[in-house]
Image (cartoon, rainbow, N blue to C red):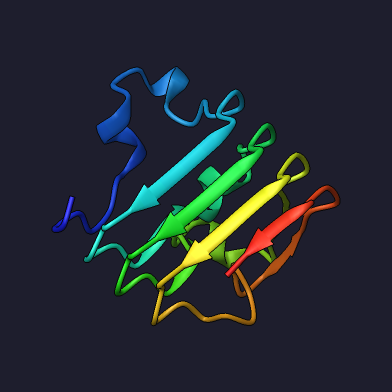
Length: 115
């Protein structure tokens, strides 16, 4: 996936009722996406209530794990990854290390963090 720049929800699912239905997603592993700037949009990140594992490696231009989508950016955003227990980030030279997202993010259960 060297040229992947973004995935819009309508590319994943044609049914508009299920377009933002990621509540059961528990694991996201991404590597070698050399054109991807943001892993999730705010609107998608808010629906990842069961995410337990987030591993991202070798994405040279990735700037933020969660990037703004224009409609959601108008509101002060807070979102939670309440179930994340494993967070691994490796070789992400452009990642803004101070934060996963420029808004407010919290997670209570992170037991394993690797940079």
